[in-house]
Image (tube, rainbow, N blue to C red; front, top):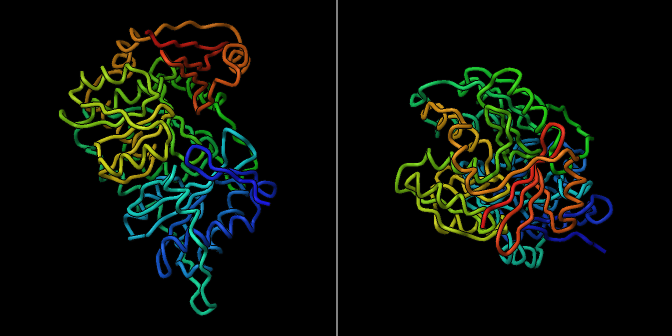
Length: 413
């Protein structure tokens, strides 16, 4: 009996244990029945072999419902939302390692025109009665061989390259994910110079677990030792971005979002998940951006962004949506906009974020990050790409790695 579950708006399960191949076929057939025979669905995955296995089973289920499949092979999650909009798809699915519970994978489900669905909407999709077509009506499968080029060109078209007063030098980690294939297509034009690390070739059997401590500290050291302007660490599917300033300091998601707010035209709207620290409200106001609070659930926040169409939607996991580009979480576009914004402002990242520190207390202890998290908050600490977070009724506490210890950041009440 299937024992996969829905966590944070995504389908989660350990392949061959909780999520069998036949389960994935059934899920694909249900999704295909929901979007309707003759529709087009986009599929993609990260480098994990289990992700490839589950994605192919999903594709078989979609075809069994009479749905055509456009497969981008290995790619970043932002390409799914982009391709749905670009090619008129009715939906999409993306499979990747689930970094909160390895060796589980997660299945993200998308609807037209590219928004990720979660919450009750996802449950409604999965509750549809499956319809299997006659053999001669089975769907067809095509491969999108040039999707990386199309996607990178679209991201660059959304960036004002001529507005930058200076071009930045950047260290970038792909965290063993497919962003390494897209990085040269973007960074050759966006950055004056860059160092790319965290690369992998499929198949990648390396288990992924949050936080990405080794990658973060490696990039932090690169920034300091090479005198770079910034470090960028993507997660495995490039839906999440962690930013490191020119001093090697790992930024809070709210601090990175505050800088992105400076890149928005005055009078813009920014949708922020309700579990983010309050400093983002003041930072938005200072930038002339109206901040609106939304759901903490990533899928429900994406649905709100699709409904209200803010200029930017962010959550405290380092995930970003630019609805005018696409309705899916896209850290690649967020990184490009950050490079554009810093280049245009002509300021150091540390100079822009230093004033925000008045909103929290910070201390560093000489104790490993995981051990500190166990001792301070145990199961109430939620891991994310950069560290751990604990949200209480009055404040947010964040634990981040540092060289030789742990940074403890507590929001002031």
